Every structure is written in C-alpha cells, then in structure tokens.
Image (cartoon, rainbow, N blue to C red; front, side, top):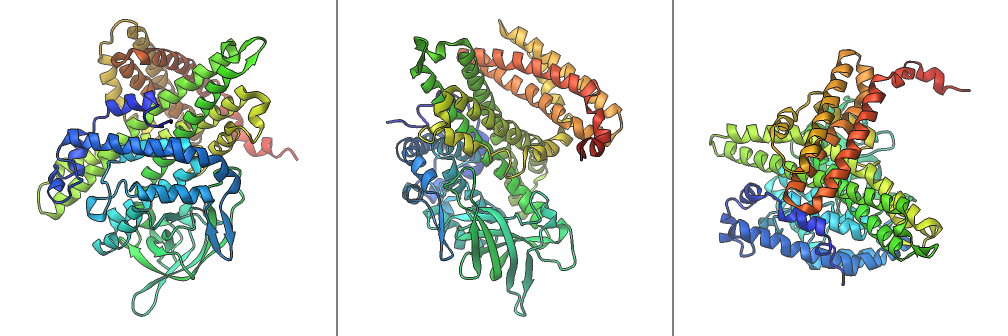
Amino acid sequence: MPNYFLDNADIQFHFSRLDLREIAAMQEENYTQAKEFPEAPVDYDDAMTNYRKVLEVVGDLAGNRIAPRAAGVDHDGATLADGKVSYAPGTQRNVRELGQAELMGLIFPHTYDGLNFPFTIYMMAVEVMARADASLMNIFGLQDIGDTIKKFGTEKQRRQYLPEFSAGVSTGAMALTEPDAGSDLQAVKLQAYQNGDGTWFLRGVKRFITNGNGELLLVLARSEPGTKDGRGLSLFVCRSGKTVKIRRIENKLGIHGSPTCELQFNDTPAELLGARKFGLIKYVFDLMYRARMGVSAQALGISQAAYDEAYRYAKDRVQFGKPIVSIPAVANMLIEMRVTLEANRSLFYSAAQCVDRKEKYEELAERLKSEGKPFAEEAAKAKQAARVANLLTPMTKYVLTESSNRISYDALQIHGGTGYMKEFRVERLARDARITNIYEGTSQLQIVAASGQVTNDILREYFDDKEAKNYRGGLVMLAERLKEMRHIFKTCLAYVMGKRDQSFVDVAAKDLVDLYSYLYVGYLVLDEAEEDARKVFIANRYILSALSQSRKCAESITNGVFSDLLHAEKILNVN
C-alpha cells in the first residue's frame, strides 16, 4: 500500500527542515483562530502536526486511489457532448474523493471552510498529487483561483464562492489566453461592458483554457474601450452556464484527464474582481507566482514518477545475464536523474517559502495599514521577498520543467523499446511532461522574467554570506568550486553588460540565468550536505557537474557563438 508522501525520503527530509514558524503564526493570526475554529492549530507544533497528517492523507489517496486510475484516465480522457464536458470516470471519482477528504479547500481560511494551510504545504500536496496523475493536478491545483478571489474580491464574493471550492462543489479556471493573445496578454480583446444598471457582461472567445469546464471562471477582459495595452484590462469572475459555450476540447499530446477548452462568452453576466484596469498589471501578475510554482510542482511530481519507473525497471530487466542497472552507462543515467530531481526539489521548496513570506507580509502590511497601525517594516519585508520571488519563481519553473522533460525521456530510454508502448507508464509520463515547459509561460519567457534580477545580481549579499561561511571536511572543496562558479558568473556578467548592447544581453540571458541557478542551487545542496550525510553525494555530483556547465556557459558567452544572430534573417531564410 504505497503512500506517496511517506515513501518519499526526500520529501520527508524537506518537510522536516521547513522553517514555517513565522509564516504559520501570520497564517493563524498568532493562533487566535483556534478560539473560533476547533480545527485550527493552537501553536506551531500543532500546526506542523496538522500539516503532516493531511499530507499523509494526500499521500495515501495519491498512491492507492489516484495512481492506479491514471492509465484509465489517460485512455478515456475528457469528452464533450451537447456542449457539456464530462471528466473521465476515474477523474470524477478522484475529484469526489478529494472533496470528501476536504482537500479542495487546502489554502482557504477557516472562515470559508478551508484548512488555511501555507502555500508551501499546498505545493507539497500538489507535488505528491502530480506524481500520481499529472492531469489531476490541473484540477486540484486550481485552488489558486479561489486564492485570487480571497485576496482581491469583496467579502460578499469571498463568502459566495470560496465555500464552493472548499466543499469540492465547484472547480475553477483561469480564462486568460485568446487565439491572438497567448503569452502576450496585453493583446487580450475579449470585451467587458456594462448595461444601464451597471451590471457587467463578457463577450468574446478564450482558447487553451485549462479546466475550462469549471463552474467558476476568472476572466481577463478589456473593460476600457479604445485601449490596446494592459492598462485597459480588468479581471472578472463569472459562472459557467448557458451563455458560456464550450466550442471544443483540444486534442492534446498528454494530460488527457484535464480538459483544455475553447470558450465563447455570449453576453455572460460577470462581477468585477477588485478595481478596474488592474486585471493584468496587478491581479494576473500576482496569480503568476502561484501558477508558475504549480506547474513546477507538477513537473517535479512527473520527474519523481519517471525516476521511480526507470529505477524499478532497471533493477528488474535482465540483459546479458545481469540487471541493466549494473551497466555503468545506465547507472550513470539513473544517478544523474536522482541528483537532478533532488537538487530541483531543494530549489522548489526554497522558492515556495519565499512566495509564502511575500504573501504573508503583504497581507499583514495591508491589514495593519487598514487598521491605522504602523506597517513600514512589514511592507519592507514584503518588498524584499517579492524581489527574490521575482527571480526564484520563473527560475524554478524554467529549471524544473526542462529537467522534467529530460528525466522522463531518459526514463523512457532506460525502458528501451518497451517504454514506447502504451502498456508502460513511462510513455504517459513523457507525454505529460512535455507541456510543463510550455504552459503558464514557456521556458524562454521564464528566462526573460528572471534575467533582470540576474543582471542586477540581487542575491549578491546572500552569496557573499555563503562565501564567508566555513564549511568542514570534504565540503571545503565543494565550497571552493562554488566560489569558482561565482567568479565565472561575475566575469560573464561584466562581459555582457560591457557590450552595452541589449540584443546581446537578451541572447546571453539563458546562459546567465543558468549560471545563477547553478550557483544558488549549489549552495542549497551544500548546506543540506552539512546537515545530512545522505546529501553529500548529491552535493558532490551536482556542484561538480554545475561547474562544468558553468564553464560551458562562459565559453558560449565569450567566444562569439552568438554573432550569427546579427544575420539571423538571412541565415534562416534559406529559400
């Protein structure tokens, strides 16, 4: 009877070293919530006990109910008939059981029948869920829509919609993308207009909408006639119904259990969420922190599942009189997969805690401000956390989703020809992984999002502190390698900025972001190795490999390999 939380030693390691004391206290209003809600924790130890118990429930459902159904879900997929979307039978059971277990309101306050968990714990649950069935994560993980309503909606909207999420009665969707507005959301055209009594209506088309059949929709629409940029967009909440026509379900490569829909809004009644004109520049931007992290958790879960499948197969598959795991080339692939997986998990939970700090300090500062109390210190902490989150969230999505593709494809390779067959789980994992570095912003857009923070070297003081730290024993050599990597980064950054050519900065951005990620993750795994001997080999393999890759990045930046971009149009126009 597998439990996908308890059987994962690395998740156990990260849970044990989470530092949520400050975050949990703010989440529970210094544990005063326990006076009104019996299920609320009375102190930090009680909170952590609650978190662990619920994660064990998630792990049990994931391992024993959801994972066994995943192949059937992938085969059946979602269907559209007479304008109505039906989940695969396995998905229907999964959603029903998650609702019965009261897991669909993991992040909502007690007031709205939720469990009021921190974002970091929610992300841990999402990773566990994605390991079982990546497509279910696209339903379970859309609790963030309710979080947006919680943050920016009215109290009436919160009380109206959030209990529906918590009870599992309603699921949601973010209706952002349009046929001519994919990543460029400033180009959104769907029209929002008011009638004489001030009621809002929506008219237009949205495309590639994950779980577009959800009962509650957050819709980005152009509320200011005549505008053409992001300042003319507002965010609306509406219910699906007769005026929202599902025109099609996309026929996708993977993630079959999650319907991706094209929606037509035919004068659909809607409510403005928050203030006019802030739909993209504030609310959707805020939602992107969580959306990036959600897909990162999905990629991490797929990576774990792919590694598990590959290792199990390599132990059992005998060729030339011995298990293929004993073949050095195969063993090296598996080691590389495991090191990448665990290093990525370190980056992920570091980023998740940063998002938690950002959000909690923003909420606290806003509450103190509304109460007429001093809030400058809290606002400053929120601003600093936001600066780091602006780096770590796109970096995490870029690194983890690209890695998920490599790990799942390597896992399929280890299976040989059998891995290409539908009978083996790894084939589905390879298909499911492919979307992760595309949706919620492609890897190229994540690099663009992270590059400004990298070129400003916003972790400079953090790295200064790490360089000054005295490591012991065999870790001294690894610390020296990280110092060498930092020297490489500084040299490359100076070279790039010295060009005073924005085009060159743009094309070198990938290598600079890679260098920064190697350095940051390197120090994360080095500190972990100092705590746990099990992590020493992870740190050793990761840092030495990262140093080699850092030298490669430096060579790419400085050897003129990008000079052909000056003639890109001529080179590409071979006809």
